[in-house]
Image 1 (cartoon, rainbow, N blue to C red):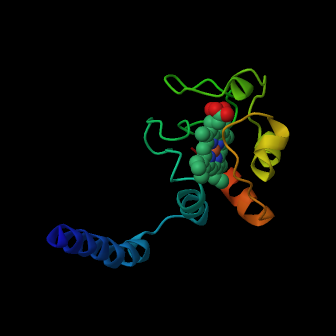
Image 2: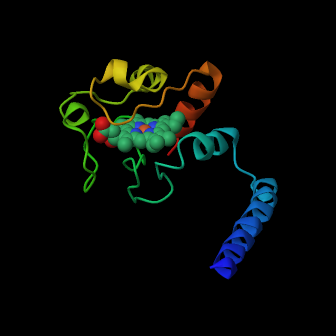
Image 3: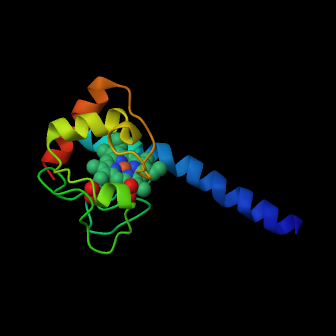
Length: 124
Ligand code: HEC
């Protein structure tokens, strides 16, 4: 048991050491970097996979709740929204206020960051 704990600690440590090296190497545009930091835990954009949240490739111009194979809340699926930059702005600033019952609940209050991320989404 003790050995398992030590082994676990060891691998956590190597992740912690590797992470800063990675972010220094990464030469991503600010929008991509912010996306990874704020959204990347739940959303994929470089690959068509779904995660905790649906894939966001081509989300600008897309009808809400329509990614194949992702189980949306009924609220988002039936929202009738088409994602424009303005709609995304409203959603990210307070998702549950725009779509009552959505399972995305995190608010993003930083206006600059929101704009940067939305601009990035428009390029994907
Ligand atoms: C903790 C996980 C999580 C994080 C972090 C998160 N989301 Fe989400 N997001 C979700 C989930 C879950 C859904 C689906 C909600 C539903 O079905 O009601 C969703 C849905 C969405 C949708 C609607 C997509 C569609 O196909 O209609 C957009 C747009 C979106 N998220 C953008 C973002 C952006 C941009 C960020 C970062 C600023 C972000 N999300 C951060 C979990 C997350």
